[in-house]
Image (cartoon, rainbow, N blue to C red; front, top):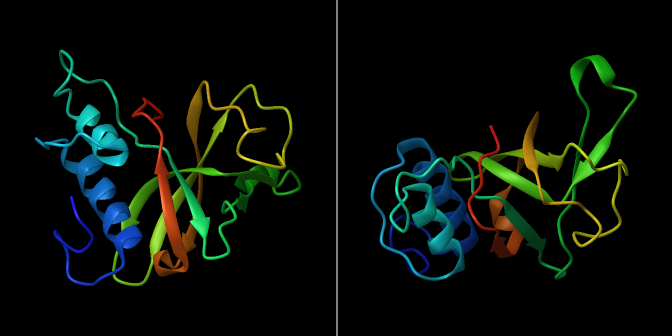
Length: 149
């Protein structure tokens, strides 16, 4: 995959986010062998017998090279705002991306100070989504595909 190869536009983070969202929806064939591409490929089980994965966790970096951290709260626990550096791409269009915050249920800290301090062993969807402008990001890191739903 190269920047802009699958979609119009020249913002490669947007294109990667869009590709992950489509792959997670379709779970069809994909040939990849680098980090994000391998994670996308793993969704399809191309390297193993029948994939049970449904999510490519992503870590995004703002233009200042700092990891992006999202915040949210559950509807019945609005007093308990939490943050995450890891996200599941829900949808992407030209100017908006909906990301679901992923958290390990064993994570005690509501607001980890860095991606390294956030537990990732059992990332799961929180049901808390945020809307971002994908063109504000300049770097994306994909973790190995997981079952988060």
